[in-house]
Image: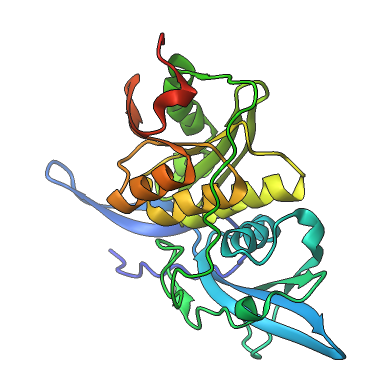
Amino acid sequence: MSSDLCCTETDETRAVRAAPSLRWSQRRGWSSAAETLAVEAPLALEIAYARGEQDVRKVLAITMRTPGHDAELAAGFLLAEGLITTGGDIVTSTGMPVNARGERVATQQVRLRAAPREDLQRLSRGLLTSSACGVCGRPSLEGLPLARVAQDRDGATWSCATLAELPERLRREQTHFSVTGGSHAAALWTRDAGLLVVREDVGRHNAVDKVLGAALLRNVICTGAALVLSGRASFELVQKAAASGVPVVLAVGAPSSLAASLAHAAGITLIGFARDARFNVYTHADRLAMAG
């Protein structure tokens, strides 16, 4: 039996790829099998802008992500970092093979219409961030946009029954997870229009950046939307929702204490353990129809 389990495919445009594996079970012992894995590959996030007569290029971070929707990921990342506020702040978003530091790595360069504020020009994580943490490597939490989300003017509420259905509806949209079991998902839903966008990625924060970046680039107003997460709700995911003005965050898993504190301060309705037709509400339950 061959012990070569190396996955040699290097196509970084693919979201999933085949890999050989060995399976063991008590009943059958060893056997060979072909598996499908979620692709994890580096992406450098770079900004470019004019400062006087000088053209500035700056690598902000290198994140491990599932290839695809890189322009949306970059837009969502920049929004959460406070470098942009609307899609109009972006002139171009271009995929490149080499970044500003001369590193030969897939790069998404976003050219900004105007130079960032002086304090944000210094923003740089300066290291490789994992696919698990969107805040890891950030010098500090200072400068993150933590504005309070707007209240619905019409006073409309979400049906608890509708919210309870969203995790299963999201699960049906997770095509990569269905074949790999190794990707997270995020989706944006509204009461009226239903599902707006869903994205998958090996990184939870990348999936959220792609969803909120897609909304930004499509000029979708998020004030009446719910962000649905396939896993837990952490601080950085709630922060990204706040930066986009999303008033409801619903997670299949548990929220962290810092996520709940931020949701309370930002005016976000935070829902966790949303599965099996039930959920827990941790903050701002006034957006929910208490009758069901």
